[in-house]
Image 1 (cartoon, helix red, strand yellow):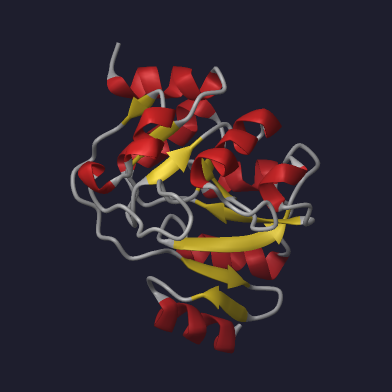
Image 2: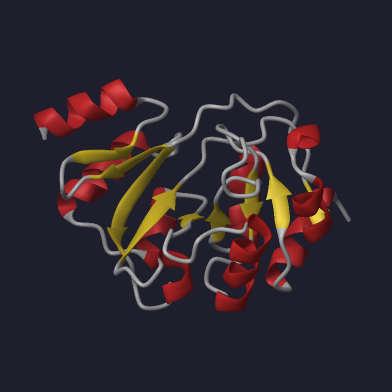
Length: 193
């Protein structure tokens, strides 16, 4: 059994996994399992009013769990996979704990083979940095804090990640919520569409 197999099995069993992305290391749980998502908040010490995004393996998979408008879908098709999180209406199977009770959820399609394969095998996974809230995001495994490392069942080592956070975009409002990778291209797209 490979590390990827063990990681997918752990997520399916409700456990947490550290995984690499094209931005930073992420903390994965089954994004549709409220109890597993709750553990993500506990491990990170994250305020329950701050939502967590979900990662899926493809644009098609994103529409299984979300209900984007035509404009949002056009944006998603332009920028995903990539270091971008898009806020869209969620479908009912997405739990309240993930979205902090909002009717919208951040969706990611990481531009990273290991991340995509993990999401393909385990279903939608949480997409949040593998760190305690307020601490720096990890670009390498050895930068992940001890409390996070001890809380996960499997750590997938993908080497050093680029370290640039994803840009969070609210296409409906035409605004960048958090600036990160590709922000200039995103601003240009929002202005033109």
